[in-house]
Structure formats: structure tokens, C-alpha cells
Amino acid sequence: MKSTPATRRGKRVRPEMNVTPLVDVVLVLLIIFMVVAPMLEHAAPVDLPSIMNIDAERHGRTDPITVSLTRQGALYLEQEELAPDVLDRRLRDVHEKEPRRRIVLRGDRGVKYVEARRLFKRCQEIGFRGVSFIVGSRSEDAKLASRGAGH
Image 1 (cartoon, rainbow, N blue to C red):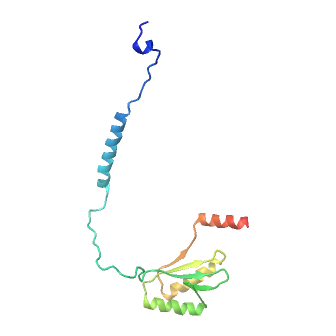
Image 2 (cartoon, rainbow, N blue to C red; image 1 turned 90 degrees about the vertical axis):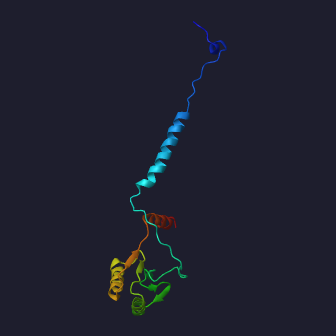
Image 3 (cartoon, rainbow, N blue to C red; image 1 turned 90 degrees about the horizontal axis):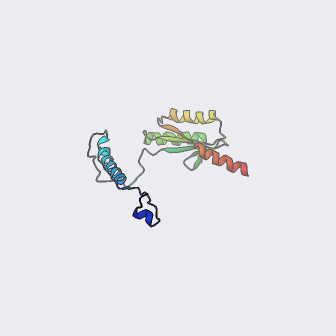
């Protein structure tokens, strides 16, 4: 058996992995994706216009009005509690002034659907086209249920 300098000293030869080619390949792929990705955009190149005079009021006429229905049947326009006939009058006034304005309905979980549907229909009869319901997410429902179960 022939002795080599490494075996004479009693040390074993340890294999080492050269990562330089791997890094080179990864960098080349990164550069390719950085160059190709913008070309994959399907939209036509357009220089969008900018505005010179920005409205001082950020909330425009298209901001929705919120109508809430509580479990007890109380009606609120934004934060103000109103009787049903007064609510109808106020909503008609708003619709006359701003016919494109949307309305958002919030109903308590305990409200019967038929009551919420009646309110929805009243809003449509007044003339609001954009009527929608606000609902909670399932994760919020689970959090509320767990809090209620613990008390």
C-alpha cells in the first residue's frame, strides 16, 4: 500500500462541496426572471394622467350612507337613531340631493332576515340602486362565539 502525504500525517481527506457553480446558476436564473417578468405584463403600456387640483374633501358623493338595524328593531342613520317614517324622509332627501349615492345596511345577528329584507326593499323603493349588506367574516364570528362561551 502506497502512502500519501495525507495518510502519513494521520489525517483523512475531507470532501468539500464547491458552491460557486450553484450560486452562479441561481444568480443567472434570478437575472433572467427579473428581465422576463416585466415583459409578461399583458396590459398595453399607458402613461396614466395625473391630476393637478386634488379635492380638499377626500370623501366624495359616492361614499355610502350607513343604515343600521338593531336586535330590538331600532333604526339608525349613521349614528342617529330615527323612527321609521323619519328615516324614510331623510333617505329620500339624501337620494334627491345625491341620486348616485350608495347605501350600506348593517343588521344585528339577532334580527330576523325578513326585517332586514324589508329595510332593503324600502331603500330600493326610495331609489337607491347601490344597496348592500355589511357582514362579518367567519373568523370574527368564531372569536365572538369563543368569547361568549367563556363568560
